[in-house]
Amino acid sequence: MPYTQFEYLNITLDLHPRITDKIESMADNYIERQYEQYEARKAAWEKARKYGKKKTGITHPARTEQPGQTTTEPHHYKRVFVTGGANGIGKAIVEIFCKSGYRVAFCDKDEIAGKRTAEETGAIFHQVDISDKDMLEHCMQSIIEEWDDIDILINNAGISDFSPITETSIEDFDRILSINLRPVFITSRFIAIHRQSQTTSNPYGRIINICSTRYLMSESGSEGYAASKGGIYSLTHALALSLAQFHITVNSIAPGWIQTHDYDRLRPEDHAQHPSRRVGKPEDIARMCRFLCEEGNDFINGENITIDGGMTKKMIYTE
Image 1: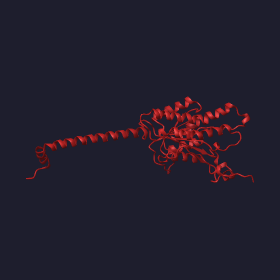
Image 2: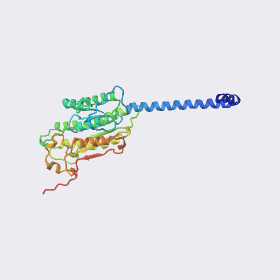
Image 3: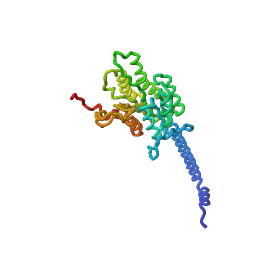
């Protein structure tokens, strides 16, 4: 009568003691491998929870798409902070990232517009005067305490006060730099210090600075504005080198003529002077911001990208 598998195994073990030792060794190795795999999965999950997935207790921003409109797939809930996000280009940036599944916070001095944009998009609004270093850093600290980190920083806030040089005081000049240029360094430095303090490295980071075509072309009375945008242009490639150790790419976008209101009131000649045959819209800049934040676009670094419908490439002659 043939033996069952268990009877055969018992006989084999009785006749060959060495086999018993080998089986015990194999069992020990199997358990050890299973434990190592468990630890690896646990570590991967913790990293994903900290740097990619939604943190428990944080409310995801509301989607703002209209019926029948589709959005891109969520980008693992990456965390975005935008300065000057209540109006114009900044608002378009907030909108496009909210629609694309990112978690978004923004700051602005304009409380009424900021609350309205937050309500429309589901983003988190902080009222901040970005010329105040302590207020700006406190805002970023509160965001990091809630989110653990900031994956994407978009320095958009700025003013464009023009005045004849003979009527521009030193205080006027300093004020423009304190709003347009200085906060770019403050926010970028804050992110670097935070990343340096972390025990686990975030493998992803983006900083986008909104520059202007006036960094290379000007008109009279624009000294403060031109200087601030030229500073952003240079600061961008310096930051790209300094922040590479933290896996952060740094680029700037130089918008040309971007009409933020009353677009329908523009004249035909306004559009005609652009090779693209139209004046720009805030969404043109917002789309480039989102493009630069795609995972696969980390080889674009330290660059300034001009978006002006080709206007700065056009030779102008007096007819």
